Length: 560
Image 1 (spheres, rainbow, N blue to C red):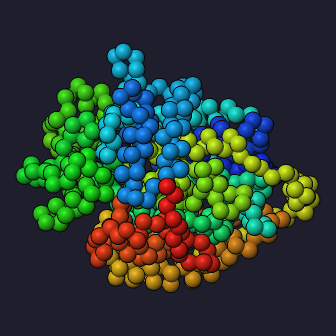
Image 2: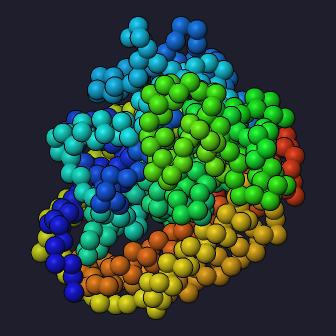
């Protein structure tokens, strides 16, 4: 049977002016910045308000102090990016960032302030100045709350939760809509433009700071539609995620070390003292040093010692982190917090230009799903939320095509829509589908995590590619791929649940395969990509990797 409470009427099938996919910071800011007067559909896969943006603790990087400048911010970004930052993207971000701070203040963002009323800033890894704005240790949460309140007041906006995009609609070489699974309904929605703001792919790994929906689905959708993706081999592994049996992999913000916390092994020694910058060295270096220490000592974690932070300062600055630790019976101000590296941020994504446009006309991407060339091989701490804001603002000048004859026909086609009900079932039970997803995540961590090597990645790529073929033959996925644009499909239970799991697995397999292909292609180590069988950084590899359906993998020059 269908769910007794579908929760809402069917989404009007358009044509909409713009469909925005994802309601984290990137999607919400995009909705705020799109030109007035447009009909905008915002779809959000979650029924709750979880997003990677909302989980972001550290802050937002921007020059706001007199002793800082945009050249310094650019230099720090380029240094962290290990030679692969595109100069035009870096210059654009650092120059636009202060204006975005002003925009956030205008919207009502309540950043922490100093006693004199000036904006408070902190220091994070690889920054040469205190330039990270924050709201205690819940900056992302505060940002998303402000943006959501404002975005949902926008005239002409419809925000629908619990809706996942299953395909992009491409017609005559242009993206002109989406296929969505809205509760028990599978339908096509037409639009003049589609903007992906679906987040990253940290949940492809079993150890991650990301929520479950951050599994690279936007990358899988864009690649399948014919858009180019870049730099997928570069994944940032955060050194300090809570490591405790039975506890979630909760991020312990880098700002904690910026305020004076130190990494220690069981004997109280530093596992990172040999690194330039020690505890505040780039994240990839710290993560590898911690794993090396853990392997040598036969343990699964190290400690994060907060004793270097005055107690009242720690309580004031990091209330969320301290509360989460105490909820797991830890006393973080009396004993080191057990931490270990975890997948955190994907530098790669759907390739975009400075206007957030992808290589597929009509398709745009903003936030972690996009690869703007800003982060290079390793993201500078707290540049990511600012990237969402800067590039979302570019969509205030989005160039939409004129309403086409096909759009007009779509708007008046109501009598030709057919509704079909189905109780088709998966050949694989939900328990087995869930196990396959868990196994893929574990294998991805083992062979494409902090340390990588050719043999393990080749084996997993072959296994993943082989598993994709029979999955694509599942009746439910065939129905998705073959659905007529004139058809509304209603799924009985448990068909709907099984289709969601099949889509999860299919998109995870596709994105994992693309990740592995990029990791195997780059036969060097650079930034977030470290291969134990090719540990050196090689000058001939100072190029972006680029994958396009039907063309394999190539390279692109770094822009100066």
